Amino acid sequence: MTINLLEDVAPASNSLGAITEVGQRMFDLTVEIEQLEERLREKKWELRKISEEELPDLMQELNVKDFTLGNGAKLEVREFTSHSIPTKTSINHQKEEDAKNELILRRKACFNWLKENNAGNLIKNGIKVTFQKGQDKECETFTKDIVSKGYQFEREIGVSYPQLNGHFKDLMADGKKLPTDLFKIYTGRVAKIKNLKEFVR
Image (cartoon, rainbow, N blue to C red):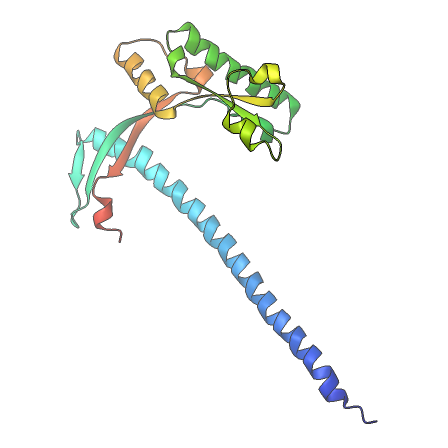
């Protein structure tokens, strides 16, 4: 019997070589993507500084509300309002117990404020029900007696971001005081490119 070591070892060596090559490509791509994402974060921060600070301040100083660049891009400054209500996801992701409890209390306080200030109609209610496998029929015929039947359910409470933003804008227009700290309300100005789609294809 003749054993050819080169023939027996070569396939294994070739396979390891292929793994090394593909593994190296994966590593290189992973590093490249991480670097690109970091670069993207830096660019977004730079854009935000220009669009929310530098350009709006400069245009206000010169009393200019809109402007057209040499390439035809049309710039304008708009007023904006932002707010936040702690979500269940953000609460669950919070690892520190004190911080989590603070978010829970603030979320509850936000909804209470809306109810007490004639804005309870902005609150959306929903119920998430969990059925077991094979309960398709029960799910289809599900009615209001979920509690009495003992099904597990989860109540979802939320507020439409655009609707609440619009409500706060109406309050500001009427000269009403806003719950700034509670809802983390922030108002400012931002520069936008009106016809951006004409330049991005």
